Amino acid sequence: NMRTLNDYFLECHLDDVSTAGTVRVAVPDNGRVIKITSVLGGAISGANAGITAKVNTTNMTGGTITIAHSGSAAGDIDTCEPTGANSVVEGDYIAIATDGASTGTHSAHFTIIVRR
Image (cartoon, rainbow, N blue to C red; front, side, top):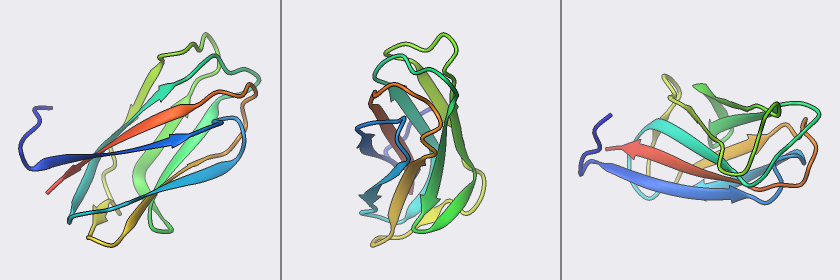
């Protein structure tokens, strides 16, 4: 997808993708979340890490990322493209949650693309 001047980017970081938890980032302007990309900090094992994106407390339709443990390594990129419940307004927050199913303490960094 071509990026336009109408897109802005939010970033957030989970210190440990293998421990159940949530990170939140404030929304500065109205728009729709069109893509979320993750980058893994290191190899995980045991099970996939399930990531769920929310606007405030509502799950985005199509807002899940599976970070595969098999063959995982630092720098692995995974993405999703939410299709519903992905509209945001200034003052909302976007939450990124991990189910903590994997093992191995590694970070995951997320870039959220919002189109105005």
